[in-house]
Length: 249
Image (cartoon, rainbow, N blue to C red):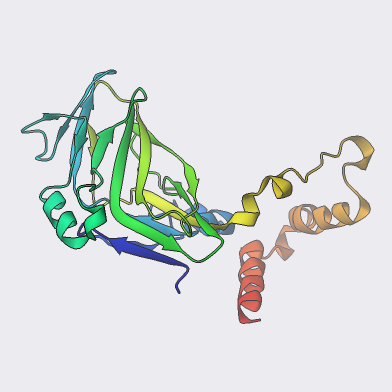
């Protein structure tokens, strides 16, 4: 079984892909060489929307257009065009009549729910962190994602995202060509309270020990004191070498 499986119920022009270490081409050249930024950007998969649309939000009510603003509809719940009939023909009889809406305004103020058109399953013990694309600098200022971690090895519902609408002075656009979400795999034991509650804060003279200062000297002091000996992208080279060795074990 793959780590993650995307079950497509609505056709997409842009299927899910591995997240790009260049932040979908958004990282500046200098930052693109930063291994921590590259690792974070490439952690997971991009998910695109199946259909372009735009909304106008006045702070209370919302209207939506699927034809670049020529016509608007009040937004409560709306389904992908012709999807309900196809859904009922596809699913078992006991699931008919319950197609998920494509977009909907929730009961919470300014919160919209958008379905990606997928149902996602992961290997046992793996969840997905549903979030905005990492280091994607072209994200709109019109909304932000409410992030969440879903136990997709157990929960077989439609993959959606809740967003908070922010802009009230202009339409908010949603484009299929831009990644809408980044899904990050995470083992369930890695975000368990028993693990995350296990931490300490050291202060004063005990904050750093001898071995820590030796590492600080090697990583920070020596390269700045002897710049001619500094190796470009040393961290990146060491990190990639270490990952390659671990993956080959």
